[in-house]
Amino acid sequence: MLISLDPQDTRPIYIQIVDEVRRALVLGTLAPDGPLPSVRDLAVKLRVNPNTVSQAYRELERQGMVYVRRGQGTYASPGHTDGVERRTLAEGVARRALHDARRNGLGVDELVDAIRSYEAQRKQEEPL
View (tube, helix red, strand yellow):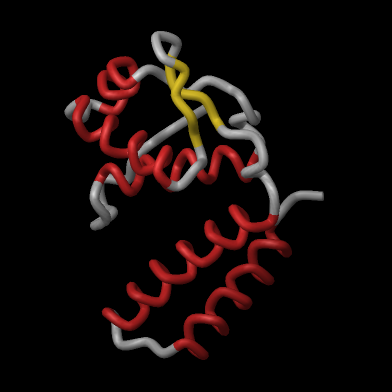
C-alpha cells in the first residue's frame, strides 16, 4: 500500500491519511484483512508525528474501515471495497474540487465543463 501526502493540500494530515487508506481499499492495493503499516513505520515514512498516524488509524477504526488485532497491528476490515467506499471517495474528490473552484470564482458548470474538456484532451493525447 502506497500512502503519500500532498504538502499543498490544506486538509489536516490525518484526514489525508484516512483518505489514502480509503483510496487503497477502493483501488484494491490494500486487500481486505491486509495489514496497514505500523504507526511508527508510517510516521517515519511520511515524516509526521506518530500521534498523527494514530489519530488517522483511530478515525479509520471508528468508521469501521480497519480493525486492530492486539499485539499484531491494524488490518483492513473486509467488506469495504464495495460501492459505498467508492462513492465516499468520489464525494471527497468532488467536495475538494468544488471548494477550490469556488475559491477561484468558478461555478459548478464551469468546473464540470473544464473536467470534461480536460478528459477529452487527455484521451486524444493518450497513446494507443
